Length: 269
Image 1 (tube, one colour):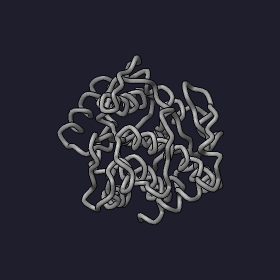
Image 2: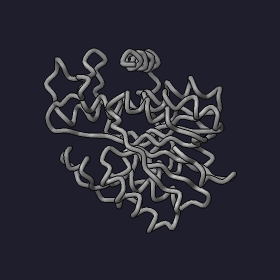
Image 3: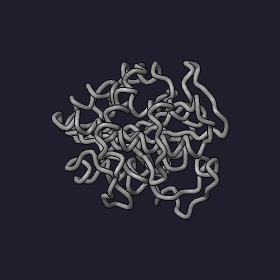
Image 4: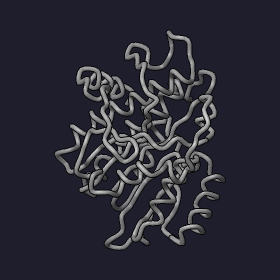
C-alpha cells in the first residue's frame, strides 16, 4: 500500500464498511477535511471503485483509495495489516452485516459475530503495531444504542434459535465492551479507543432489522467522525457516545464480562 501522496501533516484514516450508507458518509466527512487521506475497506471491488470515484468527485480530495478485505475473515484482515505502509492515525470500525438467516463464514463462524464483533477485534489487534508507531492515534468503534442480550456461552447462536435482531443487539453490546477492553490495554501507548452510536439512518442494515431512519447518512456520520477528529476522541478512552455526548454504558463497566468476552475473541485468533 503506497502512501506516496501523503504529506507531513496528513492524517490517515481507515474506514471499514465504506460502501454502506453510514460508512460512505463517514469517509466523505473525513475526506472533506484538509490534509486527510482516507482508505476505504470494502468487500466488493466494483462498489469500492464507485465509492472512491464518487468521494473524490464530491470532496476534490485525490487522497481517497480503497483496499479489499472481507472483515469476517481473519486472514483477510491479517493480510491488510501486513501490506499497510506508513502511519494510521484513526481506525474507524464500522462494517456490519445483519443476515436474516443464520449464515457462517468459510471458517465456520456465525457471520454477524464474525463481521460485527471479531472483525472489530481482529482489526484493532492486527493494526496495534501500526497505531503505536503513529501515536497519538485512536480507534472508533461504531456500535449502537440498540444493544443487549449478550450470551457469553452462545456467541454464535449454536444453541439459541437465530434471530438477526437478537444477533445484532448482541454484537453491538460486544463492540461497546471490546472498546473498554482495548482502551485499557492501549491507553499506555497513546491509542484511545471509544465506541459510539451513529445517527438513525435508513440503510440496508436498518431495513434488515425492520427499521427505517430519520437522519441522512451525512448526519448519521457525525458522532463517529467527531470521535475520529475532535480532541475529545483522544483525551478519553473506553467511553460510549451518542449525539456528540458521552452516555452511560453499563455493559462496559462489567469488568468480568468485558474480560471474558475479550478472552473469547482472543481464542478465535
